[in-house]
Length: 94
Image (cartoon, rainbow, N blue to C red; front, side, top):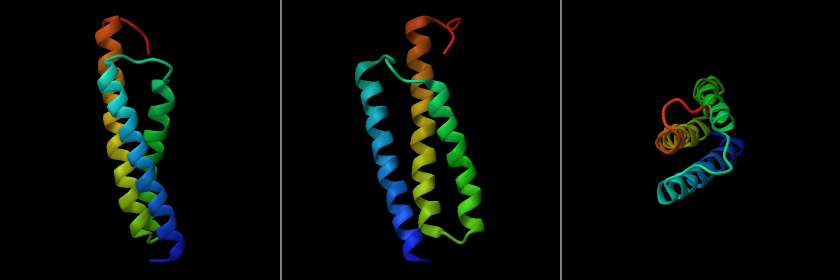
């Protein structure tokens, strides 16, 4: 573990917390406004890549923070899709 891994991992964990705040907002509002599901999905896939990449670099703390990011981005994408479809019906485009 290096100090760079620790700093990056801390940023990843904090990022996961902020994504959780997005989830809480969507759950409270029960609708999607001003958010691109495509953009959130992109960052979710980037997080998946990081789950492969960080162990390859022996960055354990970054990997753990990356898990946090991926889990909350997955919950966020599912929540956005759920509330968008609930409001617009299944035929609506995201």
